[in-house]
Structure formats: C-alpha cells, structure tokens
Length: 141
Image (cartoon, rainbow, N blue to C red; front, side, top):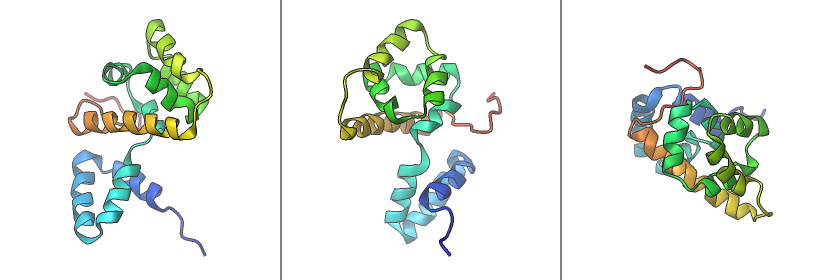
C-alpha cells in the first residue's frame, strides 16, 4: 500500500501551525534531516496560496515584483485563482500583469523561474509578518 501524503501534505500541515510553530518544527527537523527540512520549506508556499491574500496584501506584494514577471508566473496557476487575483487589482495593474500572462509562448523553465522569484518575495513578506496566508478565510485583525 502506497503511503498517502508526502512532502506536499506535510507542508500543508506545517502551514496549519502558523509561522512560529512551523519555524520551530522545521528547526527540529533540520537537526535530524537537513535535506527534508529544505524540501518542506520549498513546499510551504505555492502560487495557489495567493488566492488567500486580501486585496491589500496582494497590492503590497505587487509593489515589490515586476508585474509582467508576476503574469508569467501565473501561466500555470488554475484559471479560477488567476481570475480571483485579477479581480482584486486595478485595471492598470491588471493590464501590466496580462502582458506576462497572455504574452507570446515562453519556456516552462522561464515560468518556473518567474514563480520562484515571486515565491521568494512572498516568503520574505510572510517572514516579516506583512502577509499572512490564511486558507480558513478568517479575517485577520
């Protein structure tokens, strides 16, 4: 019988612990298995998590990223999530994002690189407490 879950499921569970709880557990894991800790950290945040941002958090993120790169990074994200994000921004921002999203065909490696850049900035903002990923939809105060 194949075990269920894996790294992505473990990362989801870590997210449920909150930033401090996840950080403490990752530190413990890192002591025993540094490679596993690194893999878990890489899977803690995904492009799909952008759907849980508020409008103000999304705009704060977009201030620090190239909008065309952001659009390029959205190319492999579920259409419903992309539509939700696009509806949260102004028309001017939306048009700049669409330049990357709907531009000419690009290599998968370019899309992956764009996603890595966006996720790196997102992780920095989460670590600083400027952004909170909240899949449960509870309002943050």
